[in-house]
Image 1 (cartoon, rainbow, N blue to C red):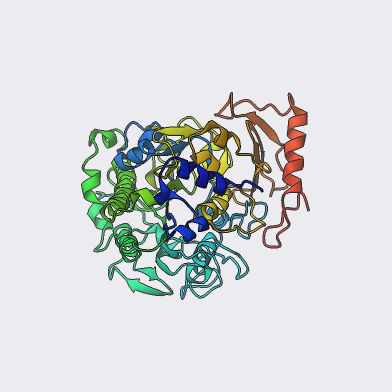
Image 2: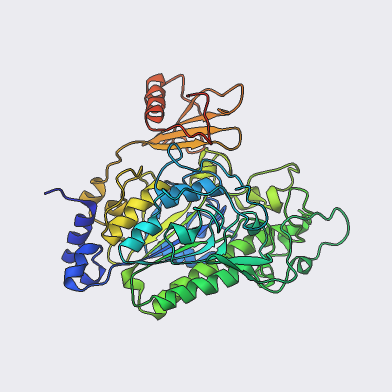
Length: 506
């Protein structure tokens, strides 16, 4: 008999006398509940912007507590270095060499139902798989995979409930005119605040860029309501929260908790690098992350209130790395100062880059009785792994064409179980934004190729991430055989896409 990761998890849990934590369909005969799944994803949260990943200035007590109670990944990667393709890879389990969405791009649907290019009706999402497995499915936050009236609508892609931003452009404001409510809208601010303004002269007043309803709080309220309504049934709660993506207009109370001295030398941000001005940009950015952390804490508390902690898997990660630099070198995009916070923790690159700073992201998993407390893993993993992993947890069969591998063996304390984890193939990125970038990771080796959508594509680069996490020493000439193997792996594991031609290889 073939021993699957789910079978190993089941055996382990039985042995540890925690029958209520047995995962999957095998619990049905015993009348035991399937594990609930909570998947929380930040937006543009950098590798080094959380306390448990080394952050010294920004307060993240709830995420630090989650890491103390669970497993922290040291080499977890997003599916893409920007929003829409990362979400596509996550939802469909197909890496960027196979994904339907390989770059950001509007649907062209106009103002009626704004949104990004839709995934097709034939795309199978993790929400669809979990719904078929008997889970109530709810999404709360930023979608980015197709307008309400398209095949990419979350309601048409497996979600029973959706509330938040369907469109990434609408998400540039935290005081937008409306939020998407299933396949309708809810007006939340009669006086909406656009996400992009400049103020070259005069006093910058934060309250000038605030309105009545702060969207992240409204989204959280709906997520908690979904949790309350489904506390007696297995549920999949997907929370792609919007912080700390700019524009920067966080709650006043959080800004005031950070030192005034931080911004005295730096000065005000006037919107010169896009998005909204802010009088205290360093404090403002820290406030956005702390507010995100507080929202994570609210979900954890609600699980505690309903007695669901022991039977709920909580996963936290980010869609890509921290915000990159821009025209005015004094500030990054939207006023973010990544250098001040050491947001990349020494990694190379930012959002929009396939170097480590753009794609390596925080990742924490808490599954009581399975993941040992305060532990770490350095095994490389990435977004395509979550679809098979969640199917494994739910005890349902994953689609056969997924690119990832279940991470359940890595969750467990036994060395034998962890060592049983074997990747079927290298990790792949074919990113069509920022002039086109490719990346392949196989263990310690990483190959990168830049500018592949230009007339003068860059050569392949090679890095040993065990010795060089900053990707400072290109070893392409020293190890040509390794580079050739990784390039061949890339070419063997990609497919042509008419919307995203890659003439270099087609």
